[in-house]
Length: 183
Image (cartoon, rainbow, N blue to C red; front, side, top):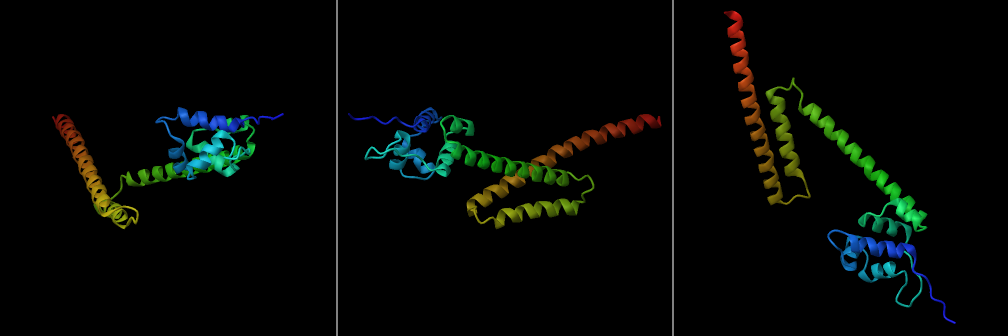
């Protein structure tokens, strides 16, 4: 009598989430994102290799798949893959910590950039430093650097124009107020 092996719960979860993905993903597209072969992805989804032997993703690989398909660590726990859930949780925590650090650095940069005591020379130096960072970035192409420089300078120019208009309104109101006080 032949016994039929049951498909692992994790295999069905992976297949269901891949099919539900927006935009939809083929096994090959999902596999390239990890990266593994399309054949290996299909084996993991089926829960069996080509010879019909049971197969499962290693914990670290399953955690990567889970991230790609928005499978939570709790989902992995529910399909009896606590090993992968632990790795996935740790990865998510590291990413959250890095994001918090990045936000903190942005807040610090914004607060120092908004320093009311900044001299024109310090403002100019900050702009030049930002342009230098763009120019020295080894990842960007020359075209990307040029586009980023242009966008950066256009944004600064636009911000300055808005601030000048606001300042002109404040100045006019102040002059009117001072003129009224003197009469």
